[in-house]
Amino acid sequence: MDKSNGLRVILFPLPLQGCISPMLQLANILHSRGFSITVVHTRFNAPKASSHPLFTFLEIPDGLSETQIKDDPTSNVLSLVEQININAESPFRDCLQKLLVQESERVSCLIDDCGWLFTQSVAESLNLPRLVLSTFKATFLNAYPIFPRILTKGYFSLSDWEAEDSVLEFPPLLKRDHSWLFREDGEKLNQFFDTVVKNTMRSSGLLFMSCEELEKDSLTLAKETFMVPVFAIGPFHSYFSASSSSLFRQDDTCIHWLDNQDDKSVIYVSLGSVVNITKTEFLEIAWGLSNSKQCFLWVLRPGLVLGAEWNELFSEGLLRSLEEKGKIVKWSPQEEVLAHRAVGGFLTHNGWNSTLESICEGVPMICLPGGSDQMLNARFVSDVWRVGIHLEGKIERKEIEKAVRMLMVESEGKKIRERMNVMKDEVGRSVKNGGSSLRSIETLVNHILSL
Ligand SMILES: Cc1cn([C@H]2C[C@H](O)[C@@H](COP(=O)(O)OP(=O)(O)O[C@H]3O[C@H](CO)[C@@H](O)[C@H](O)[C@H]3O)O2)c(=O)[nH]c1=O
Ligand SMILES: C[C@@H](CO)CCNc1ncnc2nc[nH]c12
Image 1 (cartoon, rainbow, N blue to C red):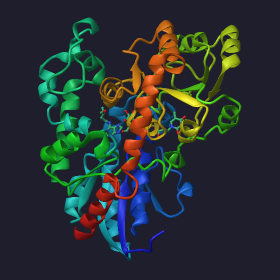
Image 2: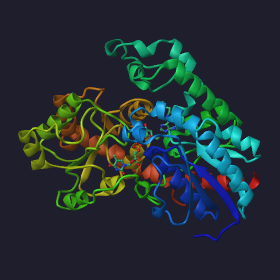
Image 3: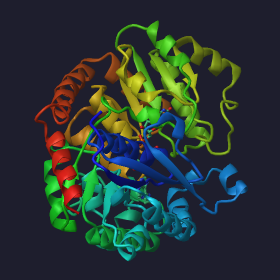
Image 4: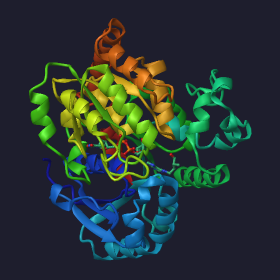
């Protein structure tokens, strides 16, 4: 670890697993460059301070009641983000004000999630520079300013069969992806995106957990769109594991189970921390996996299936046939799983973190996006990079069985795997000596020092 440079950076993640992990990776990167780190966080989904002894953690109230927390507010991300944006504003302002007075080191800047709507104004009122972290692919954030145009085109109401062709405004998205993109109220989203865009344009810089090897053009476009310095500083998974920021207890028994499986024989199945599926979809996935006759490791997160606690929907017969070939856990150490020699494929919802982790470990994917940026990530994986198979929203046992077999045993799968190996090496170079992300971090550090 480098020695301290006498400066402190304040970080403030959104309280979602997919936002906390990249923020703590950023914390590790900046700490390794000599910055002291304070992480301000809500009580809800508080990161585990004990996993990060090098950083200072400060909790602020978020106004969520015990009943709201018990009902799992992450089941509607936009409502949650709206609610905590209202509740956390004044506690955050108080906390930041106190910090700036009490802190013995000079505070260089605030870096927080693009989903916080009040932090730009708070930082300005305290004369503190603010940088923005987007936990999405840059292509997705670039779509925020053109959202009103997309909205008026009416793609959202198209039904699947009308919508095979691509969207001029937002490649490589297909029109049919749009009905899924945002299942929320368009006007509400419009306002949200508009605020994010305006705040980002007032900020001192924009950070992405991404790299030039993945999206050079989108990064250039982001610079032009938001007119602030842009830094692509990832993917750093092989250096600072995202799993160390896990909010839930990881079931490590799956690693021992993987140890007993053949090389590249297991399909890992996980839909991330917020996506929900219906009971019917859940059973179709279960039968699809079982009928594929391939080994699988399935993260069945409590709360994943709407209206179910955990695995009570399995009949005894189905459970028995699942257990022949599979292992089911509530939460996995995902990066360790993807890095395991026995894992040969990843059936994923294509959250940006999962997508990056899969690329870093060279694991080809089956894409089952659940909405928002996942629709876009999935198109890149299947249609642009061609390192995965898209289920096209068909959560049907036959389709799942077909895709699993195609990826794991057929010659098409072999080609996809070869392309993924090439991509893994390319993207891996970004964080090695002389790589684009390492250079970007150097520029970022100098930028922060100049603020
Ligand atoms: C289910 C499961 C997840 N994880 C980790 C892997 C990832 O680092 C992280 C999940 O992040 P993501 O793959 O981005 O997915 P998710 O939780 O849905 O993330 C949200 O935030 C992401 C980043 O903004 C978005 O790209 C997604 O669309 C959004 O839904 O949690 C585990 O370590 N073990 C697990 O069992
Ligand atoms: C409807 C969503 C757009 O997908 C906006 C609020 N959600 C979010 N806003 C900002 N960062 C996020 N990281 C994960 N979810 C996020």
